[in-house]
Amino acid sequence: MVRNGKSNKNPLRVSRVVDVPLREVSGICLRRGRNGRMFLIAVGDRVAKVAWFSLSHNDRARIDWHKRSISKLSGSELPKHDPQIEAVCADAAGRVLLLQETPPRVELIDLETLRAVSSIDLVIEGRSEIARAWSDPKGSRGEGVVLLPGGHLSAIGPKQT
Image 1: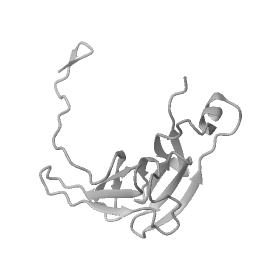
Image 2: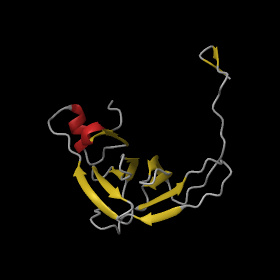
Image 3: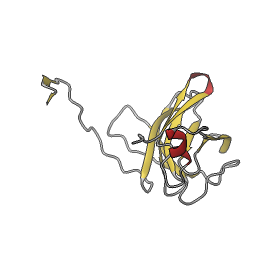
Image 4: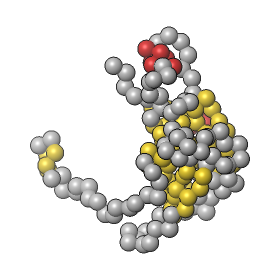
């Protein structure tokens, strides 16, 4: 493979293709369980469900998907249908953060206790271009999210033109 005029001796290769048991997957992440085991987590924005499986060192191992409705979790404010979940990430404690585009907010879920731990409305105040775009009901809001040190997060929105 040649990219930018340079030869890449270690190109990326597809090692496995996996069907996710969700409609319209909008986000995936890795999560470490309390026992140290790694899981791949997927969410979609059509229905409020999360799907996950435990990673194996063997690329050919059988995948045992688990699914859970998140709208039924204690403390969750997510609607059952069309929750507009755009992204997912996990913290060091193994909890899962879900970014909801409309309304713009995040919900922190503990999959082991099956409850929503916290919910935060995402607001951009002021009259800047991004604040106006964020508050536009026809606009797009959060499309990605990253957890940062100290309990902070960064929600990524679309580029403004």
